[in-house]
Image (tube, rainbow, N blue to C red; front, side, top):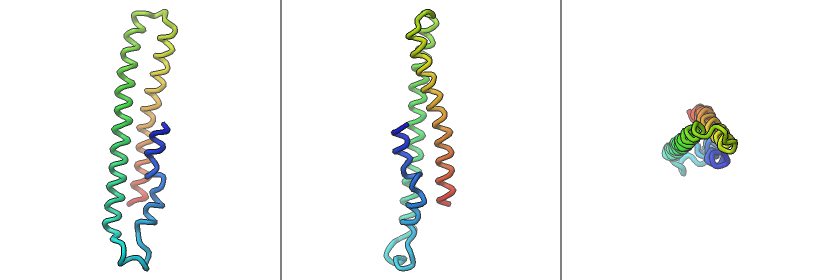
Length: 115
């Protein structure tokens, strides 16, 4: 979660980025606003793509661990430590799945500001 928070900095600062990207009247000739906006757009696209890829990768890995632990649990139903680990991994999986929803909200907000 901390890693995702850091990766979402570009989205958190989108208004500031736009304000520093679009030149004031005195800087119109000195800054290529079109190019700067394209770069900001590309940075935002890259950030969204990378975060989604990372979250989905975590979901896939955690799903695999949950599947393995479920199979082990079926064989050893009296193992309390195994049940505890399974519950922990299931909670982590739900958290990562909810991060996909958070990601959608963050992305939508950034695109609305940018457009």
